[in-house]
Length: 158
Length: 390
Image (cartoon, rainbow over the protein chains, first blue to last red):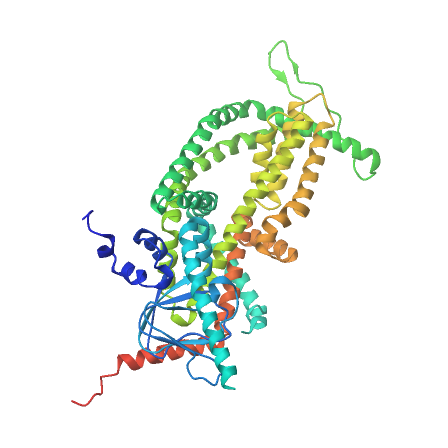
């Protein structure tokens, strides 16, 4: 029993390991993070959060799909998130309001990392929190690049 | 969100009524409430140490175990050092109480005499008669009957009777107090897990708000208890330094007892002041002005406490209007006596945050609509194949 790899003992940790945000963490460190996560199940078409609502943390999709939409936007669906992706990450950094509505496309299993708990992780396990923060910064940079490319394309077509 | 409505008069009425009801319930289960409260205080003292140990790479279980053991060893050592002194003081108490009562009487007589010189409506004290003469034939003392001796006897008698009651009451509390380290250990170990367990029961629509509510309540409690400990430390240092400069024996022990007594609003401060004045009068009988200096020092420390330390520590943590604070303390005392005075502020702090957030939740039509929508989806799912054609 003691020689079994940690991965076989915790199938949920395997799921978390596949998330970009947590990919640099060891199984022991994932266990620490797992203790801070809140698991939620949403039915297809159920609203996860609304645009304009005060955000408290980020959500990671473990199974199912989530779409984000925005009032007044000409595009129907802004983004769609599948297993392993995360959304609502800005709320982890500040107390800003949600910029879009998130809704489950199909039955979805989600884990949430609450801002206050992430701050406590920064104090108690700064090594883990800094690796998560680094991945978060990379993801935000990638999204910023994507927006710049889209804006350029928009101006080019105009 | 309708914040104005959420914190409106109905919500505040609910907060006050809930606080009073909780105080009444807590009064009946004080044997459990007090250890839980002390365990929460210990939790907030020890949780930074647990966090520090975890930051060094220890698991939560190991960190909690090590910190709890070290804390118990520390308490044991303090008990080992302090207990003999306390028992010595308690043994000597019965011998000394007459002397303390006499000194207290002297202060009152002195104050009455001084005031009667300046204020016409205060009569000078009755002249004190010499000590009782001894009848040589019967060798029994002839005790003159004067009012002051009656008062002294009744106070001494009452102290004699109550000292055994107090000792019995303290013995009753020992089993409850033994719960404190046990509760603290599990608060530290399973606190986060218990919070996640609570949150699991919350419907999705209220999830984020509830998490925020729990965070706010925990933050409120942590800041209140840490503020109270900081206030006690500041009071102890100021009062102890003052008593030391006046030349009173065991200044920091007296200051600590007075600062802890001050946890009991109003009554505790008066008890602390009387204690310090009696000790000052007894320890330095040659200096008749010393008790007055002690009173002056006590008033100075109370003023510092109320106008400087309290707003910086506890007051800031609760963010409460001073008028509401005073009214709620009076109401707590009226509803649940001394336990009400002691518990009203932390209970009000928690109920206030919970009330405001629950007020926001139940008046937020959008969240309620989302909850109804989720329930409808769940109901549709449950009956999806009931009417299917075969």
